[in-house]
Structures are given as structure tokens and as C-alpha cells.
Length: 463
Image (cartoon, rainbow, N blue to C red; front, side, top):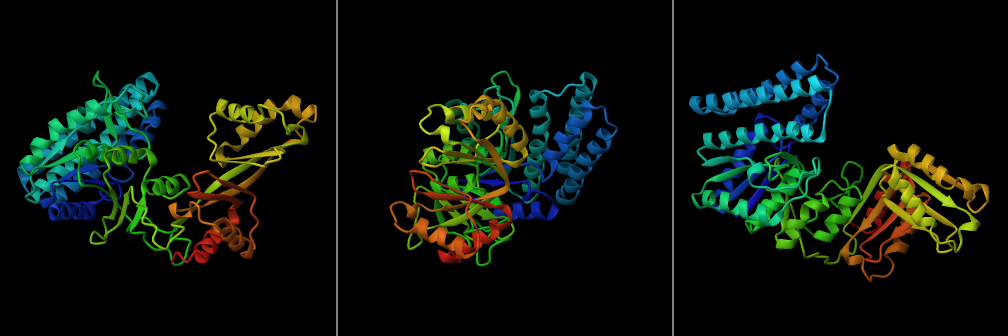
């Protein structure tokens, strides 16, 4: 058994959905379970329209027509059997009517709750998976639509619901194993779940990948395949780095580090069910299905590669709190983080001098103004007393991260990294390394980030 998760790009139009049907048919002997996202752009359209409905905008109806037309056109193009096509299109039209009623309610109340947003967002996956199940059936593949609200039980934390794994695993097995026993392909809606009271919830960022991992773990699949638009995990972003190549194998830990530092692979949360079940995750390309992709598992497979990949995050700001009076004063760090937490600012990286004279935090640039205001307010008296000299900001900056399990205990990686960056004529603003030694992070001016990534990629011969 394998779980195959298809993202919005992979199910985004007629050609791509045809490719999905062929991929599923090719792997029928392995008893696939399909998990799918909404068609590309649909979730954004649903949520944008909800916000327009609050304002009673005249654009709501045109957006609904656009949504309906897009799905009906695909159904007409890909489902040849008239009876099956008519049934599918009728169900899609009913769903659009239900959605219209929801928008009308939002408009009347002039209120959009997180509960309503989750209910509205769910329509993308439902419309998409109904369509995929019918397309597979039209290709003589036994398939059945599965609404994951019936099998994935969550709490009522709308927007990022927590999954009840024991209950969900039991429901998944009871619902899907009989279908798989009949060589029928379950087509499961990604991203959504349901509470005990029957309310619709969503699983947060990368929710469809998370669904794939939950289902794969519950069924004890051989592998979980995440179908995307790239051949696998790369040594660097090929848009900016010459010689970037696909990595055949990385560890869960490496994947988590890469994802945290900007690589669009798979969200760390998504991997948790797979890690606990010991199931490998394979990243595959819908547009190049014969490519082997990248396996993510417990095994790092370092070989002769000490460093695996170089990643970067742009659009950041560095805020530095510094002063001679900070040395030996307890609680400064706690106050910095408490102040940032009050205004809901996520800290991406921390760097502190051993002298305790300076502490830097790197945050998203969009949060810079409110973070700076809150920190200056927090330390107003300390600045007046000269305990703290000032709160400074530098932006835009980028974090460049060097990642690899082979780095642990290997001498010279940091020196080689810093030398490569210096020889490229780039100044390093701040540095951080965790005790795990699986990554070294450095902050540079954003204008130099891609140049720094290329320099480090070259010095470690990753191409």
C-alpha cells in the first residue's frame, strides 16, 4: 500500500488531472490511497470571497460563477460517461449553492468567524476530490470519494485543529481497508477534518500533506508519496544557484531543518505521523513521474557529503538590543521574548555574544515596526538609565543556512563556510549554530543572499 498526495498544482487543470489518472493507474498494483488538495488557487479564491462577503461586495457572485465554471469545465472535459458526468456536475452545482448560502449568511451578519472560514475553505478539497474520483472511474479505475471530516477527528481549534490520532487512525482503517481489499482507490479530501459535534475544521499550513501522512501512518503504508512540481529535494534553489541537483535521500531531521530555513519541501508537522510509524516519505514530480524523487526517512545517507543543502529565507529584519549595562543582568532575554510574544511576532533566529553585551533576534520584515515599537516601550526606562544603549534594526536581511547530518562532529565546516562567504565579498551580520550541529545559520544583507548561497554551494562541491 502507498499513500499518494497530490497538491494544488498537480490537480490544477485538465492536462494535470489526466496525468494524475495515469499515475494512479500505473501504480494500481501497489494499492494506492489518493489524498488531494483543492485545485491551484481555489482556496485563496474561497477565502478572499469570504472577506468580500463581509463587506457585501458585488464581486461575490462573479467569484462564485468563476469557481463553478472552472470545475464544471474540467468535469465536462474529462468525464466521458454521460451519466457519471451529469451526476458529478449536479453534485458540484449543489455544493456551489451551499457555498453561496454560507456567503449570504456572512454578508447578512457582516461577521466572518474562524469557524465560518474553515467551513468555507473545505469546499475546495471536496469539489476537487469528487472530480478526481469521477475521473478515475472514467479511466476504469474503481474509486470512491472519501470526505475526511468523517475519518479525521479533531478538536475545535479552527484554522489549525489538533488531530485525535487514536480515534482518527481507527476510523481511517475501518473506512478505507475494506475498499482497498476490493482494489478500490479511496480519494480522500486533504486539509480538512471534523469535530465530534460534526463541525468542519482545517489542519493549518500544509494541511493536505499532513492528511497524507496521517492516512499513510494509520494504514501502515510502505511509503507516503508527496506529488509536487519538482523532481525532489534540491541541494539549493535552482532558480538562483547554478549546479543545484536533486538529493536521492535525506533524513527526517534534515528535511525539518531545510523546511524551517526556507526550503519548500514539507512542513515539519507533516512528518510527525510518518516518523512515529517509521514510514518513508517520497517527494515526486507529477510532471516527471518516472524520476525517482527524494526519499525522506530515518537514514541520512551522508556518504561523502558532509553538507546536504544550502537554503535561505528572505524578507527578514534583524533587531539588536545592546548595552554595557546588560552584562550579568538576569531577565533581559526573557523580557525581549515576552515583548515580542505580546505582539505575536515569531522569532526565526537568535544570536547572542558570550559577553552578554548584545542580543539579536531575526524576525519577518512585515512585523518589524510593531516589534521595534514594543521593544522600545519595554526597555524605555533601561535606555534612560543607560543600562541599554539602544534598540537597533537592520533590514532587509536574509538567513542563509547550511544543513546536513554529516556536519555533526566534523571539523572545519564553519570555517569553510565563513571563508567562502568572505571570499565572495560578503559581510556576515550574525551567526547561530544549534548544539545538534545539523545546521549553521548566518545573517547577511538580503542583496547578497543568493551570492552567499552560491559561494557555499560551490565550496562544498554540492553540484
